[in-house]
Length: 422
Image 1 (cartoon, helix red, strand yellow):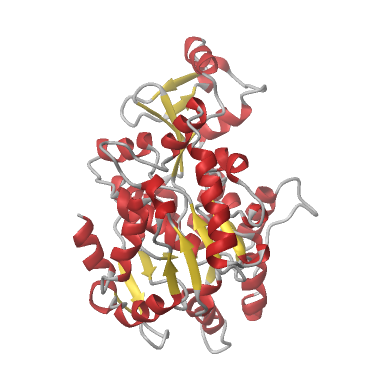
Image 2: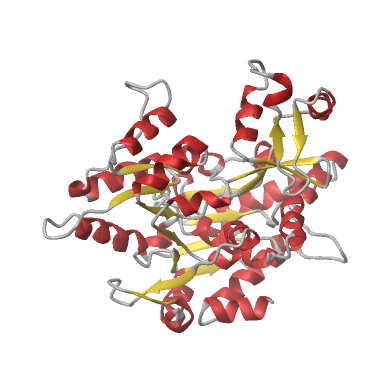
């Protein structure tokens, strides 16, 4: 059973789960085995501190060669475990089998990247591995298989590729693009799965689960944060958003012109930035100047209170005085490290990787790019002090992204939002 607790940022999802863990380990109750997975190490430490009776163990390398080996050891002995998304995504079939026997409950704090492009093999490497029959494509699933029967034991530079193939984590898309995926059947190893997030229907994880035949129950938190309620019936956010409208000031002015859509162009998208940098159009310098003006003249905030983001490839080109050190990756989630930020510049127009979108489409799953983009931006904004109900200023020059934020602020619930974006 997969249960998605879909509730607005700061609504108490993590608090609900920590209370759940503490209740599980009440001496009067039967104790569950739990694995809690979160994006950042600081959140790993926090959950250990807030749930002392659960006695969470964190995989380390003090007595083991790798964290994965330690995690396997912990599963063998039925310990409660807390770890990061990064380590969790590297699990193997051997660990899956142990988990299947151990009857664990899995809690995922935030969605995982279930499908990513795999760029560690060059075109020449791929051709060589196919030509020498080290690797072949399963025509039914498009998964890449390492042929141990033909080549016997292998030890060399492609060990990592072999291990990914053995764990069914690589798939071929369109005959030329390799995607790395999180094995969908892995979730079946757990007695129950909880996913804590917001706007789950806009995530690649939602599309991935649907593409592989998994169903999930959508839930949300009650107003007192003590109960789970049906998402479609109890997801009214109008009161919360009414408060947010008083806290969020969105810049409207001449500096937004660069992000206005003209024809088929997608200004401020990753491709747009690449084009401007390649052709030296001067628009990146304009963006840099506008960003500096926003922080220095519009908000007049100290550099320690400023946050900004752009696609990592173009970070150096846009950094400037008064805000450079406030850079936060555009898809940052689930951390409180930036809660002092009060002036924010979101310089991205976000789209998911087209190869991954087509991967879903080939499996009959539509992917809502607008809901995805909105989700990424909201999570980034909520790293700031708005999380503790303090006011913020936003510079969002992309017309599309800015309009998505306005639409979100003026809809009562996520089902209504999805309806308007469909």
